[in-house]
Image 1 (tube, rainbow, N blue to C red):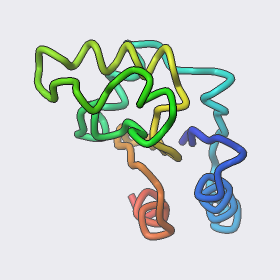
Image 2 (tube, rainbow, N blue to C red):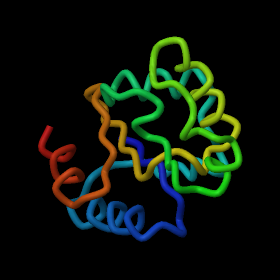
Image 3 (cartoon, rainbow, N blue to C red):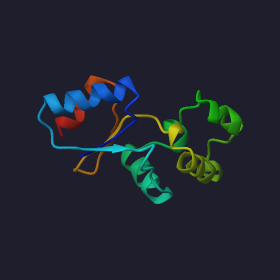
Length: 119
């Protein structure tokens, strides 16, 4: 499995710590340094069963600068959201775990992390 993290994020550090404590095999991806491209982001969104606006950190300054609060949340706007996430990976909610079984989860709680481990 792979976990997308921002090392400055306490939720990311907690998730990595829990994975290590549980003896999970995983790779850490610092997605701010190694951002996903549009195709990879689409794949992860499909695995999550979410839309790009569902994983966008709308409170970030860059989100306000871009005016994402005014963007549509429909199929016609999807590419605009994905392009913003690719161009500004800081907008991507974290941490995200992509599991070997093809699933993924936004792992903001210990229960979410444990859920991935139980699959």
